[in-house]
Amino acid sequence: AQLRAKFGTYYDKIPMVWFWGKIWLRTKSRRSPLDQEKLGYFNGSFQVIVDALVDACEAAGVRLVRSGLSRISQGEGSTWVAHDESDSTSTHVDAMLATVPSHIFQKLAPALPPGYVAKLDALVYEAAVVAILELDRPLSDVYWLNIADDDLPFTAVIEHTNFVSAEKYQGKHFVYLSKYMEPDHPWFTMRSDDVIAAYLPHLTKINPAFESSWIQNWWVFRERAAQPITPMQYSERMPEHRTPLKNLYLANTTQIYPEDRGTNYSVRLGNDIARMIIGALGEESGEAP
Ligand SMILES: Cc1cc2nc3c(=O)[nH]c(=O)nc-3n(C[C@H](O)[C@H](O)[C@H](O)COP(=O)(O)OP(=O)(O)OC[C@H]3O[C@@H](n4cnc5c(N)ncnc54)[C@H](O)[C@@H]3O)c2cc1C
Image 1 (tube, rainbow, N blue to C red):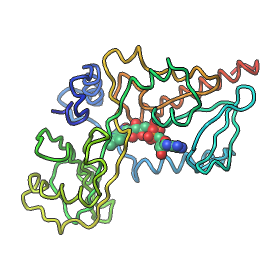
Image 2 (image 1 turned 90 degrees about the vertical axis):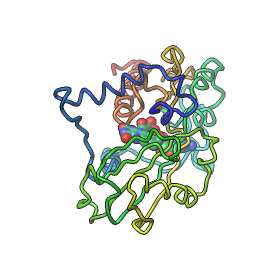
Image 3 (image 1 turned 180 degrees about the vertical axis):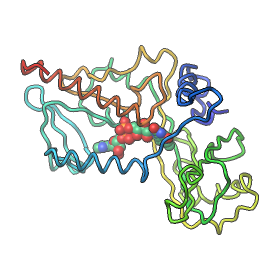
Image 4 (image 1 turned 180 degrees about the horizontal axis):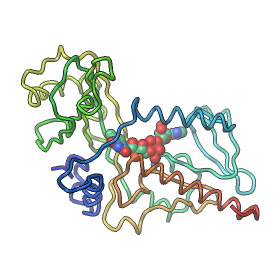
């Protein structure tokens, strides 16, 4: 049921190394097998870290361009050019690292060799719809409830304020309802208020006393590239970080394997790729990295 919840119709294609990794990750946070697992949370969410990183980069003189890209192109020699959404501003760089999902990378990048494109295409993503409810009281006393019942339209009910006290949120209670699905699933494009309306009757299965008047606010978020589906023997087909085009690199969640993608691994990946690029540029200029 858990594999179906996360991987939808691909549930029987998932190598057991994924499942092992998930169990191992949780188990190793316990001092003994009978202990509770240890979970951490950044007060104020990951946004606190993102804001601190932005401040640190700006203080170090990094120029941050807060615009999406429409395309990237090769500049003089083996340099690269990033073109903004309106294609009116371009930024020239010695090396380009793309951290967007693979299907977006293929649209942004110039003709990539077919062998590399085949590797990018070897992996598909599940999409996700996530609803967040702000309640004036708790829904239940459970923090993380995985749902194996196909009759419910969501596959996890995570009551954040059963982990981090509601006192930190002026007494508000937050419940996160998640659902992974194929990107062409009707739920993915359903209007947000229809998603909420469809979810509400099912919340009484979690707490029979639940009433919609408890909801003070709600939000619905969607992510097209939520969960990479790694097939068997994926390690042999995983796209390399160093693309066949000189000084063009890729680092995204499809290159985290065999672990399940997660923020920790993306930070690890960022450090690894930064070292790789600094090393390569150092070799080019003849300087030690
Ligand atoms: C529903 C859900 C729940 C999750 N839960 C957890 C969890 O509990 N713990 C955990 O550790 N991880 C969790 N993850 C995974 C975590 O979010 C990812 O591992 C992490 O965000 C990957 O970081 P990234 O920088 O590689 O990609 P992303 O965070 O996806 O960043 C890619 C960025 O590229 C940007 N982009 C796209 N197109 C363009 C363009 N044309 N130009 C410029 N920018 C563009 C996007 O806007 C996005 O900001 C969850 C993910 C999902 C979807």
